[in-house]
Image (cartoon, rainbow, N blue to C red; front, side):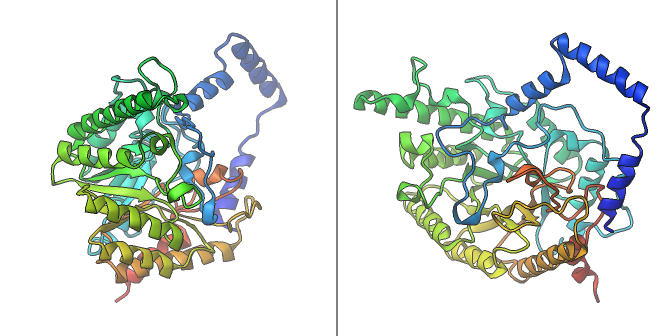
Length: 439
């Protein structure tokens, strides 16, 4: 039986509360809720505030073209406004195993996406031992930093910058522009009406100008603040969608400005940050030839216009079944030939095939975890063998206790990372690290 299962069972056995105590607790909770400040209401407000801070702007809630999900459009289990969580029961940090980052010091940096609460306690200890690169899972997205026009909220982002600085880690920025988690005010005209409803050509042009001005201000303000601490920037995120007209995602950004919003964001970032920062266009499903080629076409057009694109971020949300490692490397090679850098920006590996809604439950079969380990080992072997193609790998999380996949596409047991729910190294960790420990 896997360690995960054994400890979960132990966790349930600990709940030995008498019926009288349970009744008393329920009564107190009911009184608390009647008072108008109950945990259900607070939880609702917290999740709404994060939204995943989601502002749906006419797009589908999740893009599933070519068998790839969009992870960031699904609510996460740990809103950035939530109080810090307690560490998992019985969790601990293994001090007698190799450091992931140190193991790959001769190849490329290794990073993880984090929420603010993970900068304390055991999660922080995990980061310090295994990572030399960080990225904010949500705290630096548009709705987090500028929820209302002109009102920037820096606290959480500043904390991450300080944590990275104190622990001598690099920090990536994610993301300056996205079709999701962007506040409505960006897309309201001077009279507070939705820009997309305007039909007058003159007014539509005025709206376009206003929107691009707002974007320019947003980008410049953020880059100027963090340019000395952050070198790697996701400028635009998920702008390609082969199923939409022209292969461009039919977001409000695109409907109102065409590709000018992309050009504006990159130019503003370069002018505000200078030549020392690296600017990336980030997307998922880049292993798919259709999406890859449309992205390459867009990037070529941007470069021909003098738009300062330095590289491509490949999210790399994959499964134990798909895609092939060769297709991932082939995509990187294509952009490398265009003179661009490649990053793996959001790596995780689902236990399930696409459109499989089953659930292993608490007892994940050993053969599934081993298959995951074999796939991780193959993937990192390819990264090492082709290290000239990429300059870093970021995992979309630290351990299995916090992953978007636990609630997408259905709520179920998931274990997509290198460490389990109790922060213990999985077979996948050893598949990634152990080849480097051999003579």
